[in-house]
Image (cartoon, rainbow, N blue to C red; front, side, top):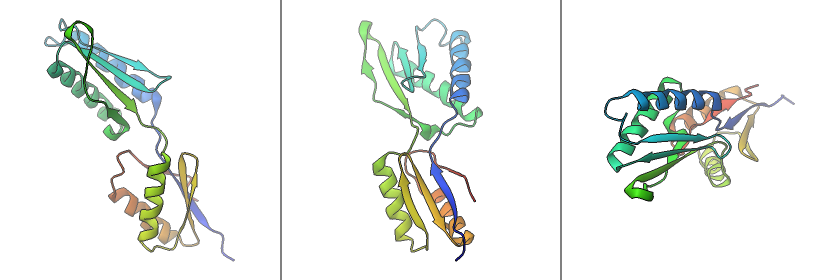
Length: 165
């Protein structure tokens, strides 16, 4: 019997690159003439995996998020890796916006990916393992078709394909 080839579908973010983008964003906020004295600031909680933007107005918070997004793109981080909540009112008439860093594939998304791959009728076996999926098949061509299919889909978070063997 032929040995099965396989790969893992994961959703991972390089926290060092996230931290670097955060540091650059903080510096730019402190130096940019339109944001410098506005009272806008951004914080990163690595433990919780969240960004918190505090700003005096919704418009300013969107500017800070745009600055952060540009830094994330330069660092090679997909923008789908950060999910932003709706702006909330904070003390002193300011606005607070929280962004959650998405890591790992939750069960609902994993089941949706599994169903979508099975619906393609490509002869592969998909197993859900905690926060990743393992796709295996005797045919490497079938695995390549699954990778291409998943790249064309949008699951609301970045997907990487690792451990291809």
